[in-house]
Length: 61
Image (tube, rainbow, N blue to C red; front, side):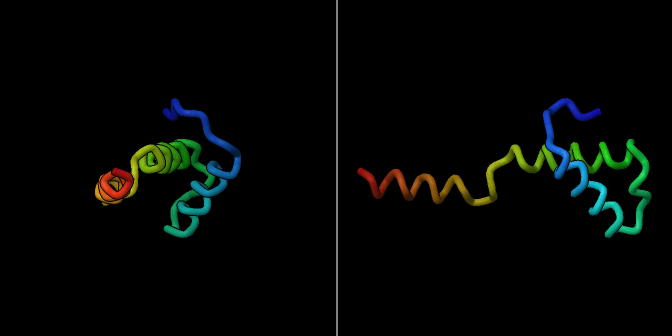
């Protein structure tokens, strides 16, 4: 279900998110779903970062 590498602390964080939502944190399927979502979010640049990068490049010229 999760094809990207991840660390143990990421797995624990996914479990904690489930606990915080009142969901079953022992279900490996539920943990993997949360983990996959976290990894997708981590792979995307923050919103608005394109504008900051463009401004930085313009300032360098």
